[in-house]
Amino acid sequence: MVELHDCDGSVGAAMGAGIGAGYYKTAKEAFGNTKPLVLVEPTESKLYDELYAEWKELIPMP
Image (cartoon, rainbow, N blue to C red; front, side, top):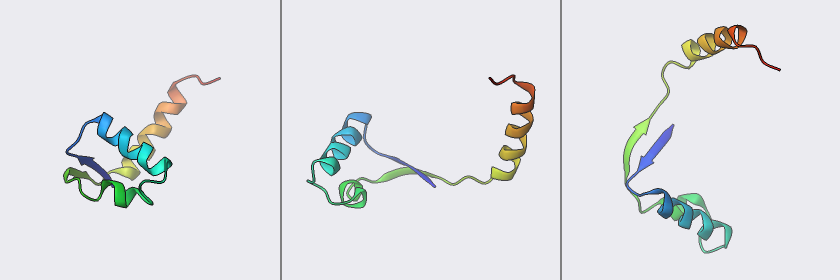
């Protein structure tokens, strides 16, 4: 699941820095006060995997 939170990239970067600096112990602690705007749950992963496999066959990869 992917969560889109009500903050911009700079806020997320600052919280990530706070985790790295030890200000927050966990990501849950850092982002716990932000409200998710959208929760995205993948529902078509099997279809995606099949289509991606077909795409990889069509595109020459080094």
